Amino acid sequence: MISPKETTDKAALQRPALGAAARWYAASVFPGKEDVAERHLRLQGFHPFIPRCERTIRHARRVETRPAAYFPGYMFIALDVALQRWRSVNGTFGVRSLIMQGERPLPVPSGLVERFIALTGKDGLLDFSGGLTADASVRILSGPFAEVIGRLDRLDPAGRAQVLVAIMNGEISVDLDSREFVAIA
Image 1: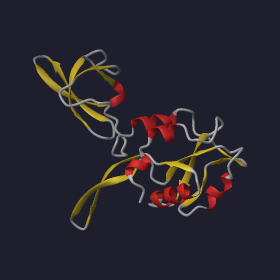
Image 2: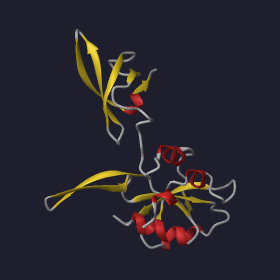
Image 3: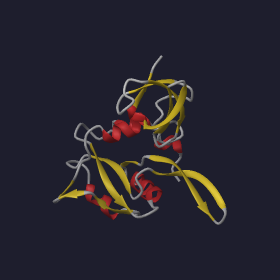
Image 4: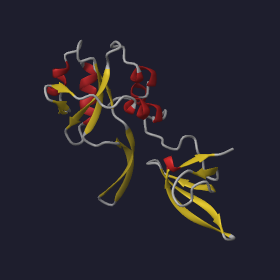
């Protein structure tokens, strides 16, 4: 298994040593084989990246929390299609195929994978909290409570938050996405 240190070297992931023409491409992988595909691609000299989050798995009266792919069945690979033998990715253990557009691999939108890399914490898992903690003051940006100041009650790893808003001498709980509010000082 790849250690978290190898997967969280953000500088190496954001700017692979492949030249200016390197782009990120998506690849379809067999179910549950993300780690196998990642290991074999690294052995071939490719630069794969799999965004991971914690998942709770219940089986046989046991509850276990472990890292899992944020996009099950998919991974990202940095390639320079002009210089690298990108067709060998399709024959790698665990990989079904690159996502193609005609005869060429289809690059993912610029900045998408870099944003996931920036959100990856030291533990190798995606962290959507942006450094927010419980009881932080936040300003809601959109929706019926736009421009209202509230208090962050809870934020889960997937980016869903519960904000307490003071209305009519009481506090009500509002469920929001982490993109719908900002921290205030």
